[in-house]
Image (tube, rainbow, N blue to C red):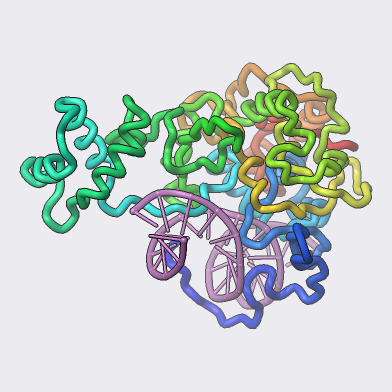
Length: 388
DNA sequence: GTCGTTACGGTTGAT
DNA sequence: AGATCAACCGTAACG
């Protein structure tokens, strides 16, 4: 974040720009997506589907090197690196909240005060609130919200929420209340539950991370993989899997071998989530299977942006509850209870992986290297184990 | 060959 | 309704 500094002059243009063969460029309709150098499909500016993200983490935990993951999934190594780094840092595989802007004047504190004023005097006028904000020193003349802004706050944030403000004074977004940020993680479904998770700013290496982390954690479902599992269920019910999720993804994606459920049975009772959840996101057509045992999944996604949200949506993010990095709880320690690893794949994999890597924080080879446990950790997630 | 980093072009969503 | 802004995204490429 530190501003985008331009350090070297490169010819290449940003992301997709360069790819020579832009084979898949947005074609007539939905064909969003461009093809990267590895042959994977991606949508510029949009996050990879959760399934792929999940897969990246999963593979890393199985001990697959990032470079191999990159090739297998056809995702740029920079992206793999970024996702794994984030996962290690925050425990979440979810992308950060995209879009939106920070409140300029309607800060959490201001909103809180407005709410207080309104609760204290339901008949108070917006201009009176404005005066009180000034009088109480909550704002100064330069940053006091306009009457119209106050009205909007009353209408959108306070009115509807009735109780809990969207943001409480503290930055921590309440778990469920609709938060401004992160909706992304939520499901697009009608009732937007908000996912407050807040925009955790997840900057890839950023300091912000902390905040990030915090949120999710507190949220049981939020970014945890577990949730994902839950999601799956949810999705299935809703039919999201069927492509509904926004319907964005073509149903076929489901078949994606790698990601999908093929391998999983819905049965993963475990945490409930599972790949399905992930799948939700994913619906990408997948070419051939192929790769190795680990699941191979190929290319990615051509997904309509709109979906994305849905995808990520879900109740929460995927933060593995017991994630090692977790500052708070006992991370690795137990990955919690629910290890949902579905199939034995992971489990075994983990096992296998364990020995060697524990070590320092991360396993050398793969950043994701959380202990195998982690996987479970991801736990919740059932990771689609590869279709292997 | 691997991997961390980062400029770039892009999308999104609150203001 | 539309513009602006700031956040994030993934890729490509540097080191």
